Image (cartoon, rainbow, N blue to C red; front, top):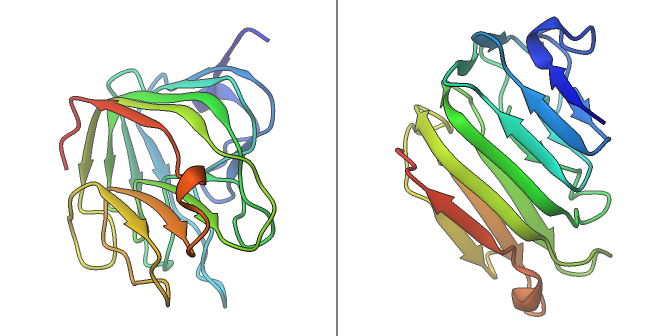
Length: 178
């Protein structure tokens, strides 16, 4: 579908989620600040990915959160409370993510909900700093955790429940600083 300049796209307003539903290349042409409103349930994310075959190139720029809205992720895959996301060939690369109250990158697969495995999630050349309610934490891959923990992480990959291990995402990552 060509390339989309996120900074100059009317779907980016810095307050509401930028929802990606179409395969393609998306790039940043400058720093972006996300200032979500505080809502009763929180969970307003900067980018919500709902498509296969997506490349997000941050171009060396920074995506940061301002304000105190709880649980806001920089990049959130689908809505796992409704249906498990199943994505193929998604890459997030070349940038800095900072000051999000949720995770820098969030992907989960929950037992008992429909959904297929995620494959080829590539995270390259990212610097993730001060994300999560408790600050910084290393890459996490959690299996069979109940209840869902209060995560403090740059990257959270979750597979929850005894039968979900085969559905845990395939992840490749390079040059990640957390």
